[in-house]
Image (cartoon, rainbow, N blue to C red; front, side, top):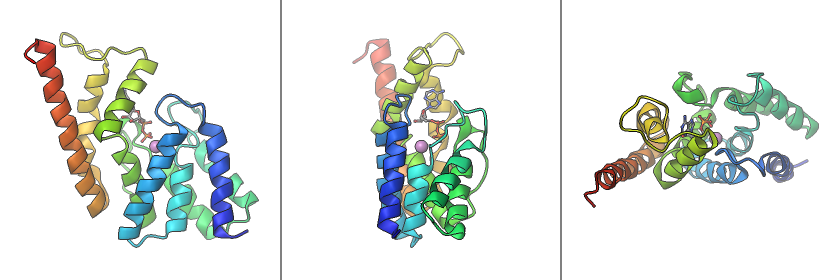
Length: 203
Ligand code: ADP
Ligand code: NI
């Protein structure tokens, strides 16, 4: 099987699995991450085959919902083996799937491969900007959380901005990823300013 056939089969596999996801890891999240990963990967002179496979498979099992921390790696390895992908490439993709997640901020692993850094940056960008804001409230709603609560320390969607989103920019791996993260973070800060003004009834 050639590379484009392998990518097509992987795409079909992932789309089927994530089509009905509504917690922020739906198929369109994958499509956006693939798109940005390819753009960043080109600039970083990364291996775009590994980048695209890694981006496609990066959320195939979600740590928040799966008991087995190696499930994503297992599913990816099994799929790629069945498509006769060479072992060196499978290992590189499995490394990305295993280490990409932000895990609510507890994953301090620094990616050791260019391709890993590229896919991780593309994934992180999708947690920032207008899309990042939409995803945060979608996830908060799914968890039955309030939008915001000025009087309490309970978990709210707005609190997530301070716990995670505003820390992302400093963690970016690539130059272009960092530049985009700075822009998207600015957008989030503007959003928060406007949010608090409206909350007080000033706008
Ligand atoms: P990753 O795919 O890196 O593991 P997560 O699964 O933690 O990332 O997050 C997926 C999406 O859900 C992101 O857009 C993230 O900001 C959002 N999200 C995760 N945890 C929360 C939370 N506690 N409140 C609001 N949004 C969240
Ligand atoms: Ni993701």
